[in-house]
Length: 288
Image (cartoon, rainbow, N blue to C red; front, side, top):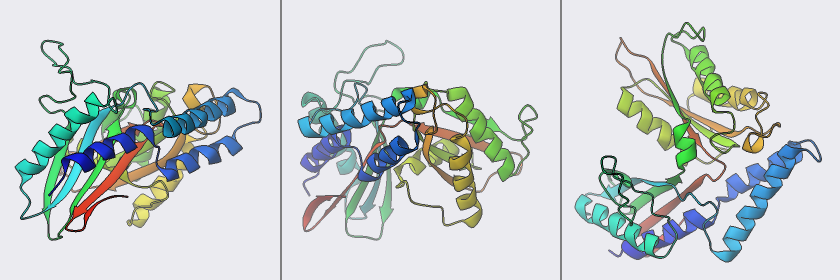
Protein backbone atom coordinates (compact mmCIF):
# COMPACT_ATOMS: atom_id res chain seq x y z
CA UNK A 1 0.00 0.00 0.00
CA UNK A 2 1.51 3.30 -1.13
CA UNK A 3 1.09 5.73 1.76
CA UNK A 4 4.03 8.13 1.65
CA UNK A 5 3.14 10.05 -1.53
CA UNK A 6 -0.54 10.51 -0.61
CA UNK A 7 0.42 11.78 2.87
CA UNK A 8 2.90 14.23 1.33
CA UNK A 9 0.04 15.52 -0.83
CA UNK A 10 -2.21 15.69 2.25
CA UNK A 11 0.40 17.92 3.88
CA UNK A 12 0.52 20.19 0.84
CA UNK A 13 -3.25 20.53 0.74
CA UNK A 14 -3.54 21.27 4.45
CA UNK A 15 -0.77 23.84 4.38
CA UNK A 16 -1.88 25.68 1.24
CA UNK A 17 -5.65 25.20 0.93
CA UNK A 18 -8.17 26.11 3.61
CA UNK A 19 -11.20 23.76 3.85
CA UNK A 20 -14.25 25.01 1.96
CA UNK A 21 -16.43 25.26 5.08
CA UNK A 22 -13.84 27.35 6.92
CA UNK A 23 -13.47 29.73 3.98
CA UNK A 24 -17.27 30.04 3.78
CA UNK A 25 -17.46 30.83 7.51
CA UNK A 26 -14.82 33.56 7.13
CA UNK A 27 -16.75 35.02 4.18
CA UNK A 28 -19.94 34.99 6.26
CA UNK A 29 -18.07 36.83 9.00
CA UNK A 30 -17.05 39.48 6.49
CA UNK A 31 -20.71 40.33 5.91
CA UNK A 32 -21.41 40.54 9.67
CA UNK A 33 -18.67 43.04 10.44
CA UNK A 34 -19.38 46.73 10.35
CA UNK A 35 -18.59 48.19 6.95
CA UNK A 36 -15.19 49.86 6.89
CA UNK A 37 -14.25 48.56 10.35
CA UNK A 38 -10.82 47.24 11.27
CA UNK A 39 -12.39 43.85 11.92
CA UNK A 40 -13.80 43.73 8.41
CA UNK A 41 -10.45 44.78 6.97
CA UNK A 42 -8.73 42.02 8.96
CA UNK A 43 -11.10 39.38 7.60
CA UNK A 44 -10.67 40.68 4.06
CA UNK A 45 -6.88 40.43 4.45
CA UNK A 46 -7.20 36.87 5.77
CA UNK A 47 -9.37 35.85 2.82
CA UNK A 48 -7.00 37.50 0.34
CA UNK A 49 -4.16 35.56 1.92
CA UNK A 50 -6.11 32.30 1.66
CA UNK A 51 -6.71 32.89 -2.06
CA UNK A 52 -3.08 33.76 -2.78
CA UNK A 53 -1.82 30.69 -0.90
CA UNK A 54 -4.10 28.36 -2.85
CA UNK A 55 -3.21 29.92 -6.22
CA UNK A 56 0.52 29.93 -5.56
CA UNK A 57 0.67 26.59 -3.76
CA UNK A 58 2.41 28.23 -0.80
CA UNK A 59 1.70 27.82 2.93
CA UNK A 60 -1.01 30.24 4.09
CA UNK A 61 0.81 30.95 7.37
CA UNK A 62 4.46 31.23 8.33
CA UNK A 63 3.71 28.82 11.19
CA UNK A 64 2.86 25.55 9.46
CA UNK A 65 1.99 24.08 12.82
CA UNK A 66 2.28 20.80 14.66
CA UNK A 67 1.03 17.82 12.61
CA UNK A 68 -1.63 15.79 14.41
CA UNK A 69 -2.89 12.49 12.94
CA UNK A 70 -5.88 10.32 13.81
CA UNK A 71 -5.61 7.09 11.83
CA UNK A 72 -8.11 4.25 11.47
CA UNK A 73 -6.53 1.08 10.08
CA UNK A 74 -7.72 -2.38 9.01
CA UNK A 75 -6.24 -5.14 11.14
CA UNK A 76 -4.06 -6.37 8.26
CA UNK A 77 -2.25 -3.02 7.97
CA UNK A 78 0.71 -2.70 10.31
CA UNK A 79 0.67 0.12 12.83
CA UNK A 80 4.45 0.37 12.49
CA UNK A 81 4.09 0.69 8.72
CA UNK A 82 1.67 3.57 9.18
CA UNK A 83 3.88 5.39 11.65
CA UNK A 84 6.93 4.96 9.44
CA UNK A 85 4.99 6.26 6.42
CA UNK A 86 3.79 9.34 8.31
CA UNK A 87 7.30 10.11 9.53
CA UNK A 88 8.84 9.70 6.08
CA UNK A 89 6.10 11.82 4.49
CA UNK A 90 6.69 14.48 7.15
CA UNK A 91 10.39 14.61 6.28
CA UNK A 92 9.58 14.84 2.57
CA UNK A 93 6.93 17.56 3.06
CA UNK A 94 9.48 19.58 5.02
CA UNK A 95 12.01 19.27 2.18
CA UNK A 96 9.33 20.48 -0.25
CA UNK A 97 8.59 23.48 2.03
CA UNK A 98 4.99 22.49 2.71
CA UNK A 99 6.12 22.53 6.33
CA UNK A 100 8.48 24.82 8.20
CA UNK A 101 10.85 22.95 10.55
CA UNK A 102 9.05 23.29 13.90
CA UNK A 103 10.23 20.30 15.96
CA UNK A 104 12.50 21.52 18.77
CA UNK A 105 14.18 19.31 21.40
CA UNK A 106 12.76 20.41 24.76
CA UNK A 107 16.07 19.76 26.53
CA UNK A 108 18.73 21.00 24.12
CA UNK A 109 16.69 23.54 22.15
CA UNK A 110 17.96 22.02 18.91
CA UNK A 111 15.69 21.83 15.88
CA UNK A 112 15.50 18.41 14.23
CA UNK A 113 15.17 20.16 10.86
CA UNK A 114 12.60 17.74 9.47
CA UNK A 115 9.55 18.04 11.78
CA UNK A 116 10.17 14.68 13.42
CA UNK A 117 11.31 13.94 16.95
CA UNK A 118 10.10 12.49 20.22
CA UNK A 119 6.29 12.87 20.13
CA UNK A 120 6.42 14.93 16.92
CA UNK A 121 4.19 14.55 14.91
CA UNK A 122 1.37 13.45 17.22
CA UNK A 123 -0.03 10.15 15.90
CA UNK A 124 -3.12 8.33 17.20
CA UNK A 125 -3.89 4.95 15.57
CA UNK A 126 -6.82 2.62 16.15
CA UNK A 127 -7.95 -0.60 14.49
CA UNK A 128 -11.30 -0.74 12.68
CA UNK A 129 -13.36 -3.34 10.85
CA UNK A 130 -13.17 -1.45 7.55
CA UNK A 131 -10.89 -2.23 4.62
CA UNK A 132 -9.51 1.28 4.15
CA UNK A 133 -6.89 3.33 5.93
CA UNK A 134 -8.58 6.61 6.92
CA UNK A 135 -6.29 9.43 7.98
CA UNK A 136 -7.74 12.57 9.55
CA UNK A 137 -5.09 15.19 10.18
CA UNK A 138 -4.56 18.81 11.07
CA UNK A 139 -1.73 21.32 11.23
CA UNK A 140 -2.12 22.87 14.69
CA UNK A 141 -0.60 26.34 15.01
CA UNK A 142 1.59 27.17 18.00
CA UNK A 143 -0.18 30.44 18.78
CA UNK A 144 -3.61 28.89 19.19
CA UNK A 145 -2.08 25.95 21.08
CA UNK A 146 -0.62 28.37 23.62
CA UNK A 147 -3.94 29.96 24.55
CA UNK A 148 -5.79 26.72 25.37
CA UNK A 149 -7.08 26.36 28.93
CA UNK A 150 -7.90 23.55 31.36
CA UNK A 151 -10.33 23.90 34.26
CA UNK A 152 -11.23 21.80 37.29
CA UNK A 153 -14.81 22.17 38.45
CA UNK A 154 -16.19 23.47 40.68
CA UNK A 155 -14.43 26.82 40.21
CA UNK A 156 -15.63 29.44 42.67
CA UNK A 157 -13.83 32.28 40.86
CA UNK A 158 -16.09 31.70 37.84
CA UNK A 159 -19.18 30.65 39.74
CA UNK A 160 -18.87 27.41 37.78
CA UNK A 161 -20.46 24.27 39.19
CA UNK A 162 -20.08 20.72 37.93
CA UNK A 163 -22.64 21.06 35.17
CA UNK A 164 -22.92 22.31 31.59
CA UNK A 165 -23.50 25.88 32.72
CA UNK A 166 -20.20 25.59 34.55
CA UNK A 167 -18.62 24.35 31.31
CA UNK A 168 -20.14 27.34 29.50
CA UNK A 169 -18.56 29.72 32.01
CA UNK A 170 -15.17 28.07 31.51
CA UNK A 171 -15.31 28.45 27.73
CA UNK A 172 -16.29 32.12 27.91
CA UNK A 173 -13.47 32.73 30.38
CA UNK A 174 -10.96 30.96 28.11
CA UNK A 175 -11.93 33.05 25.07
CA UNK A 176 -11.83 36.27 27.10
CA UNK A 177 -8.35 35.39 28.37
CA UNK A 178 -7.12 34.51 24.87
CA UNK A 179 -8.26 37.81 23.33
CA UNK A 180 -6.47 38.02 19.95
CA UNK A 181 -3.30 36.15 20.90
CA UNK A 182 -4.29 32.90 19.16
CA UNK A 183 -5.24 34.43 15.77
CA UNK A 184 -9.06 34.61 15.76
CA UNK A 185 -11.64 33.96 14.45
CA UNK A 186 -11.29 30.75 16.43
CA UNK A 187 -12.71 27.26 16.19
CA UNK A 188 -13.10 25.83 19.69
CA UNK A 189 -12.85 22.20 20.74
CA UNK A 190 -14.33 21.56 24.18
CA UNK A 191 -14.09 18.31 26.13
CA UNK A 192 -15.76 17.47 29.44
CA UNK A 193 -14.90 14.63 31.81
CA UNK A 194 -12.26 11.95 31.56
CA UNK A 195 -8.74 12.17 32.89
CA UNK A 196 -6.36 15.05 32.12
CA UNK A 197 -4.64 13.40 29.17
CA UNK A 198 -7.83 11.99 27.67
CA UNK A 199 -9.71 15.28 27.93
CA UNK A 200 -6.99 17.18 26.07
CA UNK A 201 -6.88 14.63 23.25
CA UNK A 202 -10.68 14.59 22.96
CA UNK A 203 -10.88 18.39 22.80
CA UNK A 204 -8.25 18.53 20.06
CA UNK A 205 -10.04 15.85 18.05
CA UNK A 206 -13.19 18.04 17.95
CA UNK A 207 -11.32 20.49 15.72
CA UNK A 208 -11.51 17.91 12.91
CA UNK A 209 -15.29 18.26 12.72
CA UNK A 210 -16.83 20.34 9.94
CA UNK A 211 -18.11 23.68 11.11
CA UNK A 212 -21.77 22.91 10.42
CA UNK A 213 -21.60 19.60 12.28
CA UNK A 214 -23.55 19.45 15.55
CA UNK A 215 -23.16 16.98 18.40
CA UNK A 216 -25.52 14.01 18.36
CA UNK A 217 -26.14 14.69 22.06
CA UNK A 218 -28.93 17.28 22.33
CA UNK A 219 -27.47 18.90 25.46
CA UNK A 220 -24.04 19.28 23.89
CA UNK A 221 -25.58 20.52 20.62
CA UNK A 222 -27.38 23.27 22.56
CA UNK A 223 -24.15 24.13 24.36
CA UNK A 224 -22.29 24.39 21.04
CA UNK A 225 -24.90 26.75 19.60
CA UNK A 226 -25.11 28.86 22.76
CA UNK A 227 -21.36 29.26 23.03
CA UNK A 228 -20.95 30.14 19.35
CA UNK A 229 -23.46 32.95 19.87
CA UNK A 230 -22.14 34.15 23.23
CA UNK A 231 -18.44 34.15 22.35
CA UNK A 232 -19.22 36.44 19.43
CA UNK A 233 -20.64 39.05 21.80
CA UNK A 234 -17.27 39.47 23.55
CA UNK A 235 -16.10 42.01 20.97
CA UNK A 236 -12.64 40.49 20.42
CA UNK A 237 -13.16 40.14 16.69
CA UNK A 238 -10.88 39.11 13.82
CA UNK A 239 -7.19 39.16 14.78
CA UNK A 240 -8.25 40.70 18.09
CA UNK A 241 -9.02 44.07 16.45
CA UNK A 242 -12.62 44.12 17.67
CA UNK A 243 -15.79 43.02 15.95
CA UNK A 244 -18.57 40.47 15.78
CA UNK A 245 -16.62 37.46 14.51
CA UNK A 246 -14.51 36.05 17.34
CA UNK A 247 -15.45 32.36 16.97
CA UNK A 248 -16.51 30.49 13.83
CA UNK A 249 -17.82 27.40 15.61
CA UNK A 250 -17.73 25.48 18.89
CA UNK A 251 -17.45 21.68 19.00
CA UNK A 252 -18.07 19.84 22.28
CA UNK A 253 -17.72 16.25 23.46
CA UNK A 254 -17.92 14.41 26.78
CA UNK A 255 -16.65 11.21 28.27
CA UNK A 256 -17.10 9.41 31.58
CA UNK A 257 -15.08 10.79 34.46
CA UNK A 258 -13.90 9.64 37.86
CA UNK A 259 -16.43 10.67 40.51
CA UNK A 260 -13.80 12.90 42.18
CA UNK A 261 -12.83 14.76 38.98
CA UNK A 262 -14.52 17.14 36.56
CA UNK A 263 -12.14 18.52 33.94
CA UNK A 264 -12.99 20.93 31.15
CA UNK A 265 -10.51 21.36 28.30
CA UNK A 266 -10.83 24.28 25.89
CA UNK A 267 -8.76 23.81 22.73
CA UNK A 268 -8.33 26.67 20.27
CA UNK A 269 -7.94 26.44 16.51
CA UNK A 270 -6.89 29.63 14.71
CA UNK A 271 -8.57 30.98 11.56
CA UNK A 272 -6.11 28.82 9.57
CA UNK A 273 -8.04 25.68 10.58
CA UNK A 274 -5.94 23.39 8.41
CA UNK A 275 -7.43 19.92 8.40
CA UNK A 276 -7.80 17.18 5.84
CA UNK A 277 -8.78 13.57 5.27
CA UNK A 278 -7.03 10.87 3.24
CA UNK A 279 -8.64 7.53 2.42
CA UNK A 280 -6.46 4.73 1.02
CA UNK A 281 -7.89 1.36 -0.05
CA UNK A 282 -7.47 -1.23 -2.81
CA UNK A 283 -8.69 1.30 -5.42
CA UNK A 284 -6.03 3.87 -4.52
CA UNK A 285 -5.84 7.10 -2.53
CA UNK A 286 -8.35 9.93 -2.43
CA UNK A 287 -8.45 13.21 -0.52
CA UNK A 288 -11.74 14.28 1.07
